[in-house]
Amino acid sequence: MLEKALKNSSKSFDFKDMTKQLEMDFSRLQQEIAEKKLPVIILLEGWGASGKGAVAGEMIKMLDPRFFRVYTTAAPSDTEKRFPMMKRHWEKIPEKGKITILDRSWYQDLAIAKMESGISDAEYKRRITAVNTFERQLNDDGYLIIKFFLHISKDEQKKRFGKLREDDATRWRVTETDKKRNKNYSEYFKQFDNMLEKTNTPYAQWRIIDTSDRKFTRFQVYNTLVSQITNALNIEHRSFAPEADNFTDFKLSSVDLSGKTLTRDKYESKLKSLQKDLARIHSKLYNSKIPVVILFEGWDAAGKGGAIKRLAATLDPRGYEAVPIAAPELHEFNRHYLWRFWGHLPKTGHITIFDRTWYGRVMVEPIEGITPRERAEQAYNEINEFERELTDSGVVIIKFWLQIDKDEQLRRFKERENDPFKKWKITSEDWRNREKWDEYEPLIERMIGLTSTAAAPWNVIEANDKLFARIKVLKTVEDRLDEAISQKAKADKKKSEKK
Image 1 (cartoon, rainbow, N blue to C red):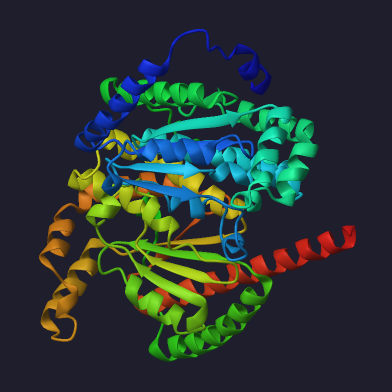
Image 2 (spheres, one colour):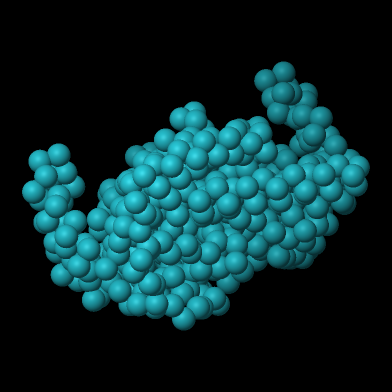
């Protein structure tokens, strides 16, 4: 791709007036972007000294600063390395109707990491998949991604580095790493080319720009911006989302709720023992640097809060976060629905407990008309991809569905209404949701059937008896974390022996 870009660049026509017109068109299109709520990501990658900063600087002169953000992406910090790779990039996506301009991006975690951080071929392949999935998910949600790779020859890069070093004001911009990359240009060329080939997709194509002539560069950039934005605003959006490839036929009626009870004495005894064990495990978890996501879904009044409270009581408060999820706020609703969850993911050795989750996308949102049914259908596969990205990054995911029957829910609702200390827990929305029980049930069964994977299976908890449910939750967490710590110890030992 790169070799062809240099050979095919053409400057055999007068483009100055055309560039001025394109600049004005780009400025005008920002208003349409806002009106039609099109979220746009403009991504600038390329060689050092290829002009990424200059292109970004020219671009923003044409835009209203209230409706765009510019980010510069460097190598991940030590703190960022403790999270899944894509977290820091998800956090930068724009709201609908706004523009994000990236001076370097998630692609720094691909070719550059392969050349300079020593990631394995398998990890490089995994990251390619993660990036392609990320870009496809954004496209399916209506985002426009415009990707530029600014290309120059080895000699041109060396010449520009020389000019920068001649000036005291710009000498600092040429680093030892820059010199190394120019010296080993051909090796970096091959790696960049491989990266571009593997990430040039129908939903996020690369535009490779020969930047040997700076004025012609401006024309090429603005021509691409105007044409792609105009198409996105005027042509029907195309989705590339595949269907979920995992399915288990699951019925809530198959969950036997009878006889799943505990006496108060037995409950107190088991609770004390399990909480002691989990406190010990949390310390081991921190030392093993294992991140954990524990999520709770279930019927209203199924006992999620009580189970979370008993679980959290065992943990070091410095090492976990409990996140209650309600309806999205406006700034959350105006982004891809997964955006707000990426921001709460745990770093290594820490735990995040979600009280309701991204599964609202396939349960509440289609029933309440928040999300069209066809868009909600795409979420099953997106959720599996999201959870696979986490587990591939080393995150342990423990998923709970707390199951109660309709009679037990009614009993608990009435108990809450009659208890002055619990009355705040019951709202008109709870009663309204109860009326839609028969609508929710098939969606819950479909959710569990399509998203219970080998790496992130659902644990369905018989919760008609709260005491039984709490103990089963704690025991499930204990067993899964013990297993994860053991597996991590074996993997670390094997890695150490190879050295």
